[in-house]
Length: 315
Image 1 (tube, one colour):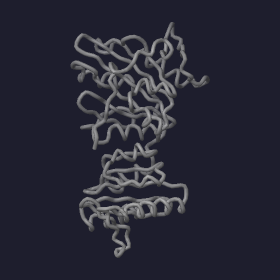
Image 2 (image 1 turned 60 degrees about the vertical axis):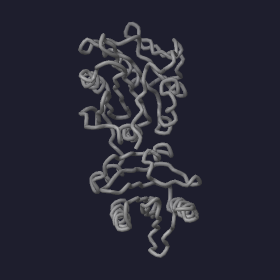
Image 3 (image 1 turned 90 degrees about the vertical axis):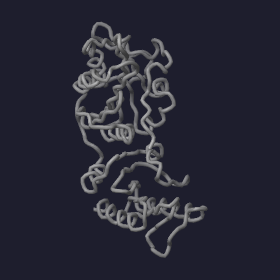
Image 4 (image 1 turned 120 degrees about the vertical axis):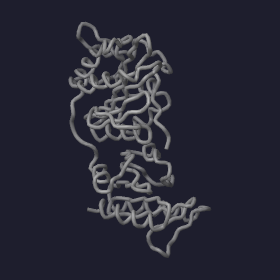
């Protein structure tokens, strides 16, 4: 799996005053951002974030900056499409500095808690090395902390120098400004609690789906909402469709696509949608409005895991 690419502030272009969030005399001035009026909770968050300063001697550089809509492409170089897919609303960014280094804080407001968890799950899967006790769930790695809380996803990152020791203190200050609400998607809870799934990614489109590169895909099928993860030695994905007909059509498209490809052999005799692919076995089955895909190292692994997943998601 690919490691998370944490955006470096020094690779961003200077946006100038058009895209700055100027904070003067306790008031918030949104300049050229297209931010919706009448969203006091978001503005309150901005005011609170702007007051985070001087943590262990680390001072904010310049002012808090806000990015809404297409302006996100100025903040996330080359990766904004993924954030849009997850339901991006706006982002707040700030930098802290001290003699020994610099730190970036990015706070992403999403459409709701499921979307915020989804973005967090994508960024953290395969990249974090331990848990971080911030927000409703968090993870950390060498030089960064990620967490989600309510409709917010947060990244606190070392830009240069030695700042690892202060990252938790800054993350804690950001955490305190954000309201907790909602929960992770129900299907995520199900896979984790009932199957012990790890490295779970809640996706909302093809970009999130492709985080787990072992999963197969046919260009003619629609990829919307779903969850993927690792259970024992198998990669597991459950895709959600509007109705059973759409789910069956997607399943058939996958089967038809891979049954005619070189190196992918459909095992029709077993009547369980098994495909052999690069030495692995892939099981494709539908359960109501849910398409279940399992990839395992052997026939028995794939079939048994498919039965386990179907029993859980079919309830």
